Length: 483
Ligand code: UDP
Image (cartoon, rainbow, N blue to C red; front, side, top):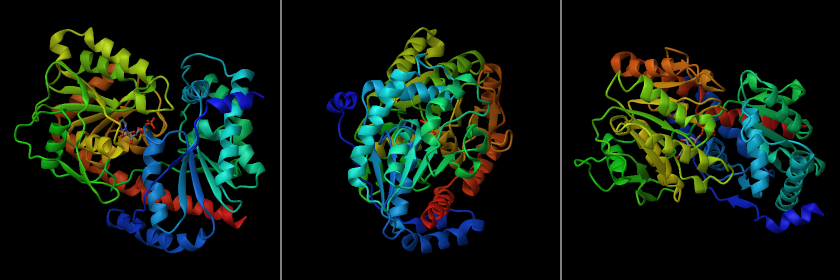
């Protein structure tokens, strides 16, 4: 009984408690052409899902784009009268090493180079079985389940066997699959084929060997009212960044306040951990990348590109910011990546090191973390996302929504967001010269940079707000309920 052995080590499922948010708010920021559809969606959602709980299931409550989206989409669905709930599956170290291996391969990267053989499959299925059994104790036969990403794919056949409609939502992929990608597809396909619908973020991510009639394309989205993206006055931005220890501003007006999703009063109670020679001043031009400490986000490459091709072209500083690694439970490689960046930074000559700031953002309080990211994105002059591979790249949409000029890699879902030279700039992820030139261009051509920032905001308004995402889910799930 291998499953029994695994069970002893596994904590229980986590039900993430989220509040309700009013979907009507989205009408105030959405593009005019979308307003009628949004009103109509809100009007029918309650009746459509009466008697059906919609379960979203993923593998972490915080850290990364999937958690970020569930934190806003689930409350909006609840606010529209849908009984939407969110559960986080459990796993042991071995399980998360296997799923990280799958994640890396789905991005075309070898990761730790380990196997995806029968032993890994057995363990993956054992953990999936335990999670499915626990989940089935919570779920009613009339419910609908939306599973997210490779960690949850093993549950698909087990939940389908219980008669439940199951949507599997894949947030990762590559535009040009290689053999490593195909290995991951081969590992997951037996499970994914069983889903009623497999959803991908962009058409190019759809795998070979799936029934096209049972796949759908839904791009991710951002929530314009979350702590991550809500409007902030410049004075609030300064106060937040000063209180969290990121930018010293003697003129900042304290205390920094923000509104929590439950309507409560938020304050900055934690300082971020900063590795730097000197604290940033408010007037220092800043290039920012915010990401998990993941090799595929290439923080070391951003630093190399900045040192070799930006430092001599302008006076900007670089900040690499990421979450405290202890809190991103489904990412076992975070610590090693963060340490590698710190060690590369220590080896730089002092005058260059002085222009680079490494930041670990606290994760004790997710909304406080989000408001700090929001303030950083609003403060930065240029935002970069030089990923080697990317599912969608929510950080790109977040920065675009704030009117920032973004320089990002032409990978994954990023080209869906940025039209090169119009709503930002795209570069080959390995071309550090082009990266440096484009970043420096934003400083040497401020008018063009502002124009791109404004166009970027409109692009997000038209395509990447949560209202569009919710309407697509409504359409997809109502189709399942009719069958
Ligand atoms: N993020 C955050 N705090 C951090 C680092 C990242 O809230 O310290 C957020 C970031 O703002 C974005 C999400 O995590 O909302 C990352 O999503 P993305 O699609 O960019 O990448 P993923 O992590 O899913 O690969």
